[in-house]
Length: 437
Image 1 (cartoon, rainbow, N blue to C red):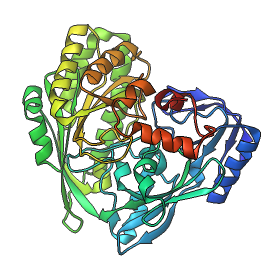
Image 2: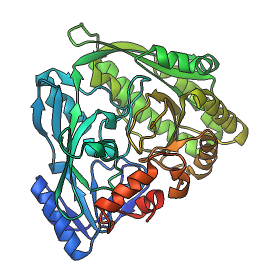
Image 3: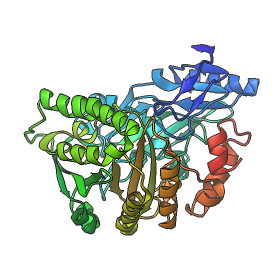
Image 4: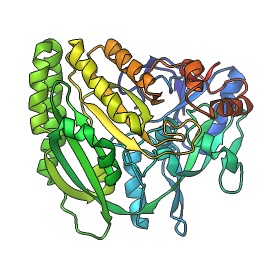
């Protein structure tokens, strides 16, 4: 289906565009026709999933392909525990699709509203020192190239391209399906509690290495870390999930309604933010429960915000966080949203933020109606000094010249882009900035 372009805006309201055409392909053949038709009209093409990127990576002034209808399970390889999914499949739908086969994704982030193609293309990740980002679970993919043809990347064809295609920023073509290496279904036992911030930072890398999944949140202007430690457990082990009432209170009442109210109050009366943050730290994250893995990994995010995240070598994570904390303390800013700190294993994907090194992540946020410019710029300066790499789907100011220095396979990726998309059919202003025109 095709219709004239209306205004498209992402979830965080950081990017908007009025595309010339908006199409809703429901089949791979329809995607091919869209690309071929756009080429004839001289229009660039970009695919979107759920619009959860904070950067302009999905902005499409030409033809916007909404892949919501290109969704579902294509096939299951029971012997190898692999599943092939259409590119627009939302992450939150995948557990239900996998349940009949006793399978699960090895790791997830804390938001599951994205499409699988959008999540891997931007480098979305979860936490866990032994686990890579979602793109590391990709073992095969199919994309439509600039001439409208299909490029298959799997164990038999174009195998050498997988480290580029699995995390391709949408710059190499339109992903139409991906094959994931899954694991047997499992549960997670979650312990969420408040701990002294100094103690957590001092033992950060040891804590992360000792747990299956460890992360912490810090409300600025407090001395408390909200830690989250998840331990993997067999799927047949009994679980003790949160009651529906407790989940509603935590996610809907406190996590959304109350947090929305305190963000609004903090914006109107900034001097109240430290007091509000101390109160928030006292009521958030005090719980122990167990449940199916996806129900523990993912949380509800009802309050809109803006985010920047940087990846640093894990051995520099504590120092980078400490400098961030000092920055906030000395700046006079009143930061109403927590800072999130996570870890991930090294991988070999060409444009992965964890390429070639064990990695720590620091994410900073501001409420939608608060100006993040000065805060994000100062944090970015700290992260760059620690050899930081920005998350592709979140706000940052880096360009090709600076990014090339941080990715050993950067020029290899650009050369592949030149080969697959010489006319820049799949480019936009963001990709021109981060990869070069």
